[in-house]
Amino acid sequence: MRLDKFLSQTGAGSRNEVKQAIRKGLVSVNGSIIKDASARVAEEKDAVCFKGQLFSFTKYHYYMLYKPAGVVTATKDSRQKTVLDLLTDIPVKGLFPVGRLDKDTEGLLLLTDDGALAHNLLAPKKHVDKTYLAEISIPLSVEAADALRRGVDIGEKKLTAPAKVELIEEKRILITIQEGRYHQIKRMLKAVGNEVLYLKRLSMGGLVLDENLRKGEFRPLREAEIEVLKKEYAHDDKRESTEEKTAGI
Image 1 (cartoon, rainbow, N blue to C red):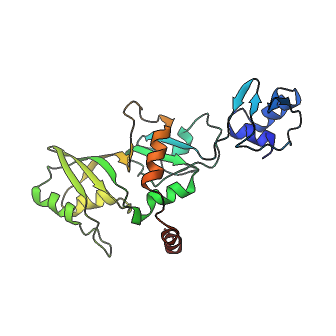
Image 2 (image 1 turned 120 degrees about the vertical axis):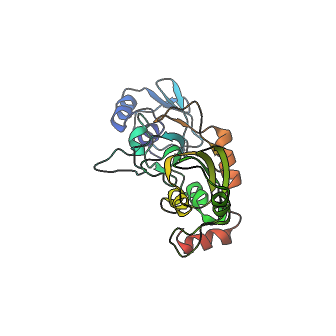
Image 3 (image 1 turned 180 degrees about the vertical axis):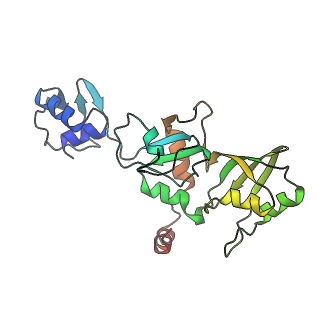
């Protein structure tokens, strides 16, 4: 990788800023001053210092965002604020949201540039749990809760997969699903004669929304969180990977 590209991608500054610093002799590779921005570096082996600070290359990046309502889950939108607009002062390019949350839904959203991990988390065969807190218009009856646990008709060819449902308060429930159909939870509650007034995603697989984050705030994932996601949702074998790609998941 070019030296200037390496430094810009690791957060040292913009491409122009790092080029100027390189020309001024402020960058060293393995202890030697390098003044050529096009010099090649082995990003995972060479020790690159910028103004005395060591910069390490990270192949993939992972961020947890507490998505607020009113923001669309997209990489760009000409009319509305997107979740990427909230990730300020991050030099990483190519980030995208893993899955989506409706505009009026809040809560946990993972953003990354790791396409393989995103694919695994979204693949139906992985059965990744997604847990939401829902505030509903009327108390959920025992019959309605049982119907959600069995699967309900939301107007598609197949019933929804069985959901886990836990009553928290009279009009507050926890509901866990493994699918990602359009407006799924809202449609599921509507199918049993109810209405979702507020929806917040609390977790996705082993990743849980950090209670210290405020709406609109984000942080990098911790190493332990990344390892959990990679370990739990890695491909089982090459055959599964091929089948999923063929299915266009």
